[in-house]
Image (cartoon, rainbow, N blue to C red; front, side, top):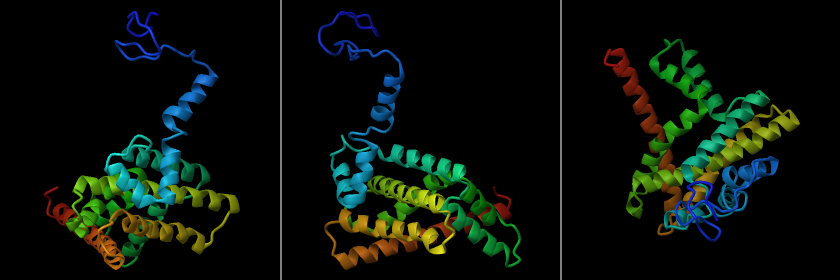
Length: 252
């Protein structure tokens, strides 16, 4: 058999020179459906498997991924990027705003209503509110630093915390996607329904950390997770204050 990719003679299902499959399918509708299911969605093992695992056993599945059990999981960065894109498109077509966008816009409006000038901090808040995908990626390393410092004695390095929070954030976005469908389906303006995904996403972080960190007592894990959120808030305030100061001083 002649390989259609490198023209090498070979026997079997795969070319022993370049590795291409001997069964080269004609590009048609069936090919396109297979590509979507196997490459993009990876129905049998990728994103749907990852979402299911993160709903059922989030901390345990992420720990297993870090320990090397990775074949069935969707890659963490790709997971965040994909679900963020879906969420942004969904909110665009349904005419709703992302939850983070609403929250940041609310903070910005509250600051402006006190008669303060449109500072650099408010501009940053407005930019973050209008650029959800970028905001998610920019804030993730900050929260990962907070969780790393809070759980520093557990022996996971910063980059492992980053992977942990990639999956947590991705699954939080999945929760927001589900509720966006509910808002649109029931045409609901209920403040309770709008705030529920935020509450669930915070609880999801606590549940994941409780499962993930096995060597700590339950009360300790709850306290350290709360500490991570407090440090996260402090880091953001310090960062925005520093940017505002540098801008006002003409340094940037």
